[in-house]
Image 1: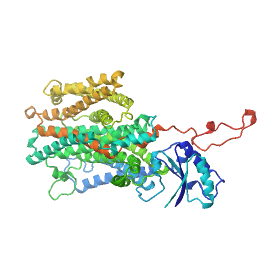
Image 2 (image 1 turned 180 degrees about the horizontal axis):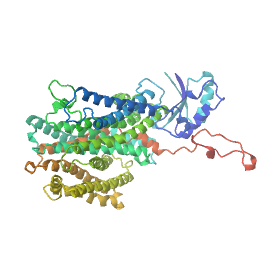
Image 3 (image 1 turned 135 degrees about the vertical axis):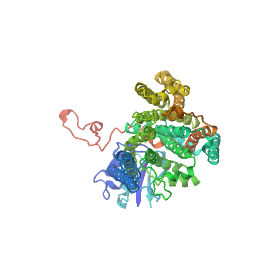
Image 4 (image 1 turned 180 degrees about the vertical axis):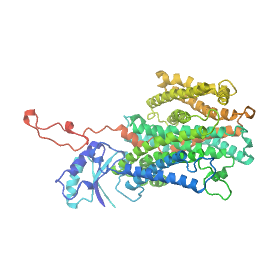
Length: 173
Length: 464
């Protein structure tokens, strides 16, 4: 992977760079999905930050809750049924008492499903060398193009610099 | 705070992590000594047996269970408050949330230890786990103690994730600022975080879902702790009001604990530019609300018992109103209402950090007393007068209580040495201006009859 990128000190400049990169027809050979953005904070409301914002995590969380709840009830009820103890006429598998364990396990299922889905979809953990610049942690916003054709390099550099970057850098792995 | 640059924010908030001051070592030494004393008291108790405690028939639950309920209550400071503020998108929450969430984690760990300490023979803890037993021990699977296990386990897991996940971007920040072994450590802890839009979106979405899920879990936890008592036919325990009463008390003591912790951090870590008087003022308002709610609950609880006039309950009632426990009861009322109410209600006192912290200190003391007064008077005055008893704590129990408070401070300080105690990335989000133009702007040609050739891009901007 080769990435041509520039760093911007404010989100408006990053937005200008993003807009100019994705402008149709001016730079042939790559599409919007090849534009990479890295920042030290979320920039909700900016267009360059809208990449990959759609997610199905809430549904996975709900499913995790369902699985957790069913497993919790089964765990409690099966244990009680297999090892019955005298209950003085009360039910061996009590609905209200097991409801509490079912509830807690539902919530735990939702929490764990959310965590696992987030880690998987955000590709974490991943310690391989990836596109990054330590200046990002100082508040700079990285905007670049992944695997852009060589013949468009001059045009891309011009666009990145035109948006307010002080220089263009290259990353490869 | 808003005038600070990102570099200054990084420098200020990473300083406690990167630089170790003499004050840090003194605090660790002092708190560590108290914790060591507590461990020594615990070892002494294990060595000599639970006869070194003050408990005796009929009071079998006393300090340890009081501490358990108290610390689980304190744990409500963090995740619950943080989650509510996140859902409400309260901008002032940003410097407060992590301070709060840390309290939850450590308070749950400390609180969770007390039932095990209370066992007397903690190495036999596994006897409580419901599994088929060849020793003819048949655990009661329907016991409220089993509910505790699931509720506290879920809350602890959820609170840990709720705290840990938003720390990852800050670990990445520290990773970029350190060298040597620390670089290796924080590289591992940052999990390879870069800050792509996808990672940020997933983080924000996860936090949103977790905030929604964790609030009912937090409420359920203290409700279930209250059911440890309310499920037993013991005078003044068997009450339907116990669930919300405990939850209200937990939030009350939790906010007070949070305020004390914030004031402590503000001073020790020089965070005066971040933990502002407005944060204490806002939390003071929440505390005032909970002060009134707590007063309502204690009145409601006492009223229904008094009006019912059931003899066993009245015995407990009077022992707290004008009997041997009355001094503690009225101290509790003073600490939880008489002193803090004016301090929090009068703006002049509330807007000073000292006033809010003073109110919080009295509330923490008052709420510990409240937990004690729920447990001990009822057990010492159960139905049969010939079985009435009394209770007086020993130095072992007092030492373990004091050590648990010191442990909270010690864990907090050690945590702030490893992790920025204020969420740096969240603070940055609050410091930058929202975008004027949200999405790609279309320049629309309009008729010259309107007196213009192009519309104002700013007016055309829309947020899809």
